[in-house]
Length: 100
Image 1 (cartoon, rainbow, N blue to C red):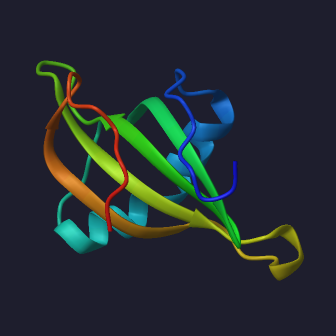
Image 2 (tube, rainbow, N blue to C red; image 1 turned 180 degrees about the vertical axis):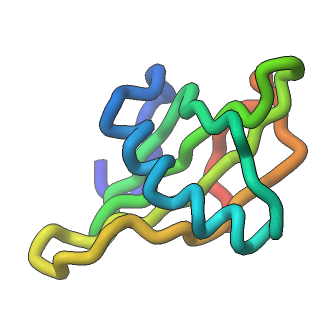
């Protein structure tokens, strides 16, 4: 359904690839690096392109996560994914939801 969020399936290799592509954008914004960056779950929202909401584990020793909002434009625009916003201080139990 256009505009609505999908269910929350486990991350696929394609979702991990999108997360890896925007990782440098996140690290630049927060001015730190993430040695662990594993996509766990995701939702999508079809707009004039696709918004991806991705839950990413950033620690092997805790359940600390970051939620990413990534925009992927339509294929004819020929641009890679862009980190729109993020939420830090999340855990593996926090639900993914729409955020700006």
